[in-house]
Length: 234
Image (cartoon, rainbow, N blue to C red; front, top):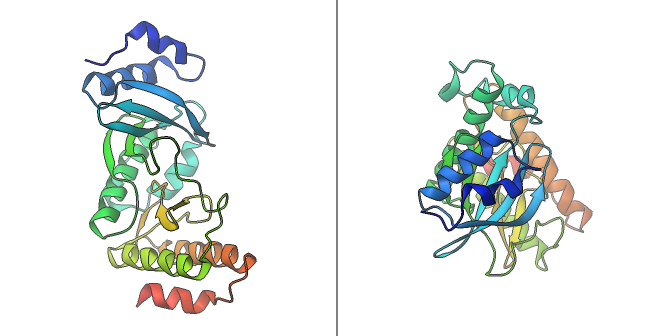
């Protein structure tokens, strides 16, 4: 059992609804973590916290049930054959979105892509490996420009290529969801990950390449979007 009580969870009541609090308590009761820590980030659709476990710290990613843009989620997920029978209902879409990120992370890890290891998910809550050290989470590349930019960019492209070979495209890749961990890229936020069978996968790949190339161009690299895209698809 976790070293917390339901009463203590109520301190989070100004952030989470009662359903999410129950989900968090269930995951903690199963031994996945002992107690929540301070927020790491508050995004448009999710809140990201760290949590303590017996073996260190992990990430707790919580998709908000009431303020998520589930129409945006459904637009991504409707072309995924794994979810072809999904009904357009808010909670079902958010739960599927959470599961989808877990499954995409598993797929990416199997392909050798540098990304967090998924630990567990339940309803709208996803538990992940924390990328960083005992005190700090690794920064996003937009906040910590790599010293060896060319090598870092090449490593990003290698990871994009591995993901593509596994039959997926990230579909929302940018300097906002690539971590700079010890001068190595780590991809995060895989809920948008889209199978190549989706008719929009080529459009998503072009956008990912454009976002990545534009960022490194702004920081002095002379790179070609078309050549980068060709290399990923080889």
